Figure 1 (cartoon, rainbow, N blue to C red):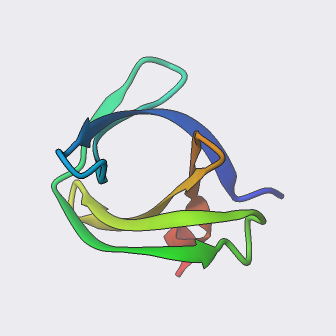
Figure 2 (figure 1 turned 60 degrees about the vertical axis):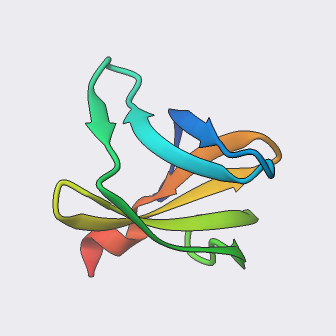
Length: 82
């Protein structure tokens, strides 16, 4: 079972070109605001596969790992099972 879920993301771009995700859009039309970004770093998604910039975020009081890999965004849903 794959733990990688590709999603559309609204992103704020600052003056230096830094990215901050603000909203996650699911395929079925649901939208989830990102309450806080705790950490941003280059990292691999060991369980879901792939690598890129990992944004550790809080969404509805749940910590999620959101990755930007080659311009595409995905959630590593393996954290959900912990």
